[in-house]
Length: 157
Image 1 (tube, rainbow, N blue to C red):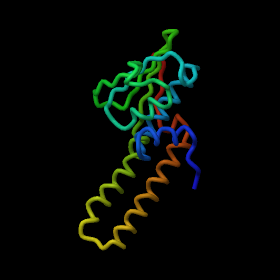
Image 2: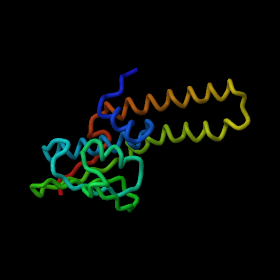
Image 3: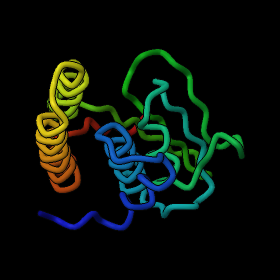
């Protein structure tokens, strides 16, 4: 088991729980900073095109926030973030199909847990919960460590 990297600890603290989409939001934000060659907290403006858990990851990774107005969510249903630097450079980072399929592995386990627990004993529910947590840990570890090119589509715009 890989220990949770510090950036993702901060994301999960803000988000309230560990999940693949907040993790992917963090990865998107970090990839945008790398592409723009800027640091967290730089003067940036961010638009995310989907109202998902990824927003918290983007906020923590970039230092931008909805409350400050430096991050806006336009819910077009696309897992895409556009980040613009103070210098006027912009990057678009999107999740690819592999990233979404990896996140979906946990969603499937979570749905199976929720659907099955009504008719099971406490012991069986505990076993299902442990299986779900094992899947979550496996998914998160992959999302923390896979190269950007495996999960993301990054393009300067």
